[in-house]
Length: 346
Image 1 (cartoon, rainbow, N blue to C red):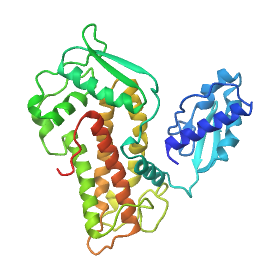
Image 2: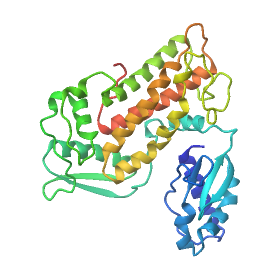
Image 3: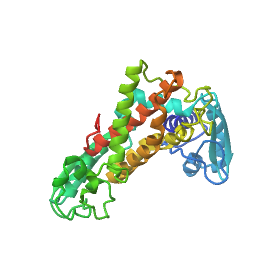
Image 4: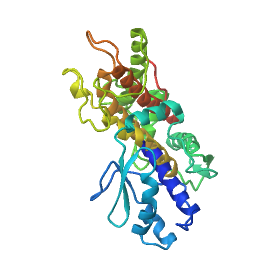
């Protein structure tokens, strides 16, 4: 069960409690699920009971206890523990694999993964000055806001309500992709660097790492096809153990340091939240920086996707390719929203 699926499960439990008359509240549009805080337990937690308590006219603990039995009965949840003033902590069914579920979700939705309805029906009016960085930021926001069900309009003039620190010089000589990255990657209040560093194909260049990670995934897909296998979600280790709880996946000794695939789970599952934040806070830089996080988690894993030496393609290799392709989908979708090409070759 992914965080998005767990959020939907919590919302369903709230709706059921309202329909059955145990809670008298307006069902929220979304519920935030994250890692447990201090004193928490399990894989995930939510403070929804604290959020609903005032409207329900009940203590948070009472709200949590109303929701708990409905959540325990949901598929994919092994136990729910109430801690502190009313936090709901989830331990997932270990027979399920959150990473496999996440890969299937991304494969099913493609580049629409992470799209939602947080801004459904809302129109975001952007008024920007005639300045290249403001233009580029507004252009990216139009696409990002649309992923959350909203619509952004752009006008020019003063007073402007979207005014990032201007570019110190014309970024056009960098080319379209590097120029956009140079203007979008820094936070709006930071002065962008319009330098040739953005063109250097080395790991010190964040844009290169993101685009290289995507190109490597595409190359691995072509390599797998030549070896006669395709991607299929499943256990990533040869023994078939649960990768969600296995700290180091089984692999030949030469591969073991790189096969830390669970490190990909958090940045991939966080992608929908990042898109929502980028849209609601008018901050495409959040998306750009998150793509770097995904790429940095992905690159060490890619060395273990294809068989090495005398290895034969196995179910584990198919599962590793599926995870790599899911991460590549996120990179391609995010780059597209920023208006930057995701190369097949690099």
